[in-house]
Image 1 (cartoon, rainbow, N blue to C red):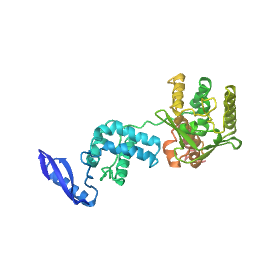
Image 2 (image 1 turned 135 degrees about the vertical axis):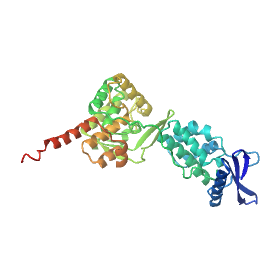
Image 3 (image 1 turned 180 degrees about the vertical axis):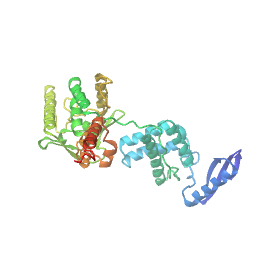
Image 4 (image 1 turned 60 degrees about the vertical axis):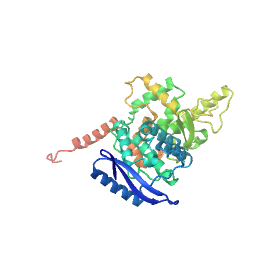
Length: 392
């Protein structure tokens, strides 16, 4: 333990010799009093003896040690190509690191990053108002990089071990599900203002399918003679690039249809066939159900769906709707409507493609109409009861 400046201490712990007989050491610099430094030295010694902290691997002469940025640049393609993480997940890792962590800790040697450095970096993210999910992405990115970095001898220590995510100051905005009147008004407006997009909204309202699932729906997934849709694939869009991938939960599910929705789909497919024929094309069995292409070889893009929803809401007027005009809001309406109608939560979650708990936490909503019905029910019981002294 050596004081190199006023209140600045360099700590060194001997870690034995390597296979070539070279002396190995673990060092750390701390700030504070002599007592603070003594405590830090004791903790560092314990970490070295337990193997939690190891000396950095020797580098080739003239070659700089791997930085935190270098570790992340290795891990991001590794996570996608070797671990098989979703492209959207890996993109989120890279984005949150570049925006929030690169300037703070990216320049540090990966083996020199301390738990204190991590805590300070995440503290700044919290102060910056980042959501819990965004900070969770950052934690997953760093934890994964160090976990797999150690496994592949990129680093010798993991400063993310035992890390606890700070609580975000950001108040999460909940998606507001529509009342029936608002939903029907939106669907009617879509039929007149955007007939190309209107069928997407109609199927979203009757099935609760995700935006990417609606985009990825192909004709071969329909079993209209059985009034069924087999939800198997989803389209994701990142920076303009499309990917045809499994559903969010990597499960397939069968969604039953009512007679009116089945007839609507038959009519919609017939209209697509007629459009194709007029332009000299035909639509194959693997054609997309919702497509702007004459032969339906490409899906209607998810981001285009979002933009058209915004345009519909704007054309209706800001005060015309009391809910978020998004496909997610319509998905939430579907689950809420079925639950309020008394359907079994297992049935509802099966249609939505989620577990019951996830559905109840995220895809059911408090609606004024249901709250009023509950109030009327309680009032009828309480006020309808005979008084205790009337003898009846």
